[in-house]
Image (cartoon, rainbow, N blue to C red; front, top):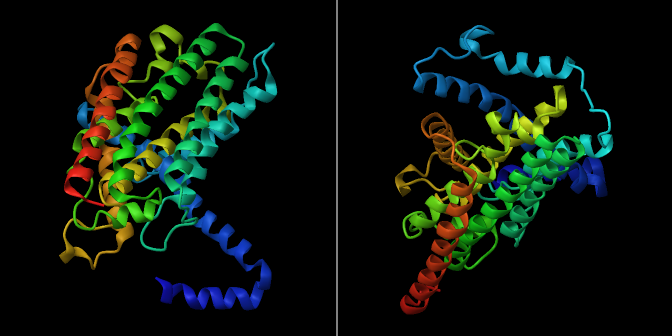
Length: 342
């Protein structure tokens, strides 16, 4: 990778001079964000096809070959609809809410390593950066619910923010054993520490807790309580329409892709192959395969399980996942001390 990048940097330095680092970083951001937006759009298509298959239905198959142009048709429809802003709402906060939901899901990709040296910013505190950025999404949901000036939206926003904060705590505690075993907060170092054994093996209970927590944090079924149609008529999104509704919608899918990538890096070895003999396959493909598997499980769960009640959801987070995560941190620390792993 270094040999491939050297002539590019040499040409850039000759052409742009001192501005080359800025140009290079902007190019890296576009290379990551462009495909990410395409992946977000087509994840909606894949979801509809997979769930239709599981429910023995047809799914989208009219727009383009086997319905492949359906996401583009949906995007055009949303862009040309009129954005309605409720009377007596707070227009500025009403419009900022969707942006705060979608933006952090894209910003967090700055520290996700795709393979060795293929990362926009290889921060030593990459884990903390992702946790800090992803937690901003709760503000977007709460602001959207409050600014709509309706009781259903406000209740949906409060529900969602409480749910996201509760499961953010559990998710954070599941990452601590990973940091303890790798001895670093740098995501690239965490992947390298899994060369001999993926962390999903010694930390399997934490992987399960992590995955269920991120399903709840992204408000996905069976934890889609903030949108509960029968109680809250779509919750915090009740008053949103057109592109503002689309940004909330896309933010949810962008967060799904982000937490799948983070789970692959933390527990499934990131870009590492399952056996050394498969080293010839590019690491970015291994990461994509692992992310695709986790995203498929997201869709599988939605098609299979009924919606939880809100008290069941909070009980699971605070009375089951949180004590279990703390206990496993103690187990991991004891094992490291007794076996002298570090």
